[in-house]
Image (cartoon, rainbow, N blue to C red):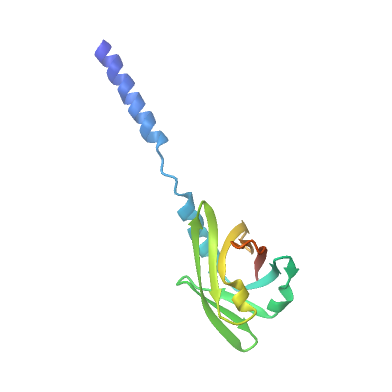
Length: 143
């Protein structure tokens, strides 16, 4: 009788252990969700604040198209500028890396942006300078 109780107890404890040890895969699914979101449609910048200065007007007329292969194209009029992008997790933060061109205003977008808000039509980003020179804010909205 003692063997049956001990065996039942061990089986119960093992079952509880394996059920409780579920792998947390939310970071990779969040990255996949971000990638799926940005590659759908054409985007524009509706807000860009560089260390307390609103510079949104510098991006008037630009549209952005992201591909699943990690390339991004910024178009203003007849001029297209190519770049790269990547979505990843760092220190439990969902981030979006951007690098588009090397001339103003697009060079201002280069960096690792922390995704602070994400909906099907809007992505809000924040970049805190490592050198203490300020915080930049960027908002993309789907056209």
